[in-house]
Length: 136
Image 1: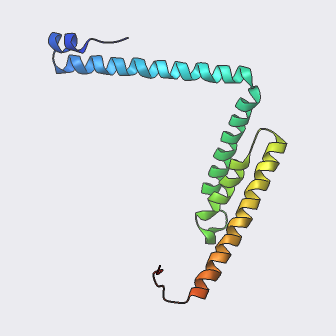
Image 2 (image 1 turned 90 degrees about the vertical axis):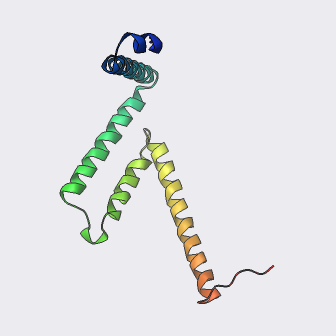
Image 3 (image 1 turned 45 degrees about the vertical axis):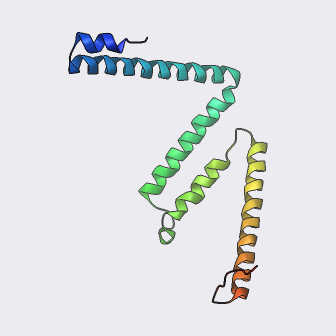
């Protein structure tokens, strides 16, 4: 529903214009929520496993976060511990094979990133204490 702003500005004062603006904003918000609900309904009809999976992941994240904030795990490590737990949830897929494949890929990438870090550290120690610009 489009509102003719010139008619509103001529027919009333500041409060009336704000009322029409707020009404239009509310209608757009309600339309967006209804459109989102229709998309979720279509997704649920197409593949209900995705909806169940999203509920499981949301519930898991909520429970793990709640447990962590009630009694922090490994207090000596600080807030970095929470990222290790969240990483496990990120790997979740709605099939076991996909979860195993994604977990294997993440483990392999972590191993290669660690090896690359050690290699760069070794090169940095070979270069010495003082760095010099490269001369071409």
